[in-house]
Length: 290
Image 1: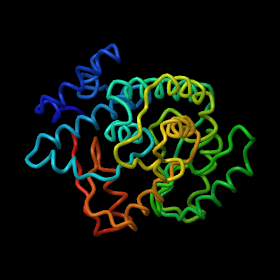
Image 2 (image 1 turned 30 degrees about the vertical axis):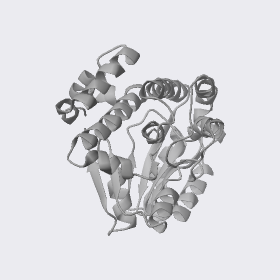
Image 3 (image 1 turned 180 degrees about the vertical axis):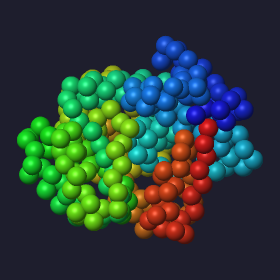
Image 4 (image 1 turned 90 degrees about the vertical axis):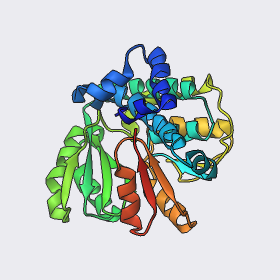
């Protein structure tokens, strides 16, 4: 991450501004790793936030790029990406967003460290079957190991989050539910469940002291798959987001049914483009990395 950004002065500048807030050379970690360090949510969240906004500058610098950016009339982001989307929409400054994201990563890491939990992707089942799989796993574990669907990504791809024993039970039972495969996610813990409760109060406090403006374009929330204009509502939803399932499938469905003509995925990787294409093969989506 970050290599392409160095060719565009405005994108490269974001990494320099990030260093002051992070207290170390973020670009160096983005480019050189090590991977284990980048996999930690404390680092991956700021790294992805900065690289995604650097990708905006990469797009802006290309021929006709500013026109494309001016024509964007709705935005959204998956989990952490909601902060990037809000920054793009002018709800808060780059710096304020990075401070929030840094704290969010630290608070989520601390919450993950407090209990043995994990996440796993279930491939090849619809959401109803995944729910049944979770119910079956939950019958075999105690309360603190319960699991739930945490990310509704797209048909055939749902992430389950919860206690380690519960996740292991899901993995053991997945084949009998006719899942094609399970993939344990390289994350710190059970994101988007009550396991993240300890992070909420810290996020609420940080959000309370952050200046947040009405976004200039709609930003679709992960919590309810709807856009919100009121800054206080957005703050409340961002605090709740870490313990709530990500309604990404509904978000993409909404965009497609409302007739979205062209999409840009800004940031590292092409996961979002893959999800959108899976839901509509004819969707026009372009990935801009940095």
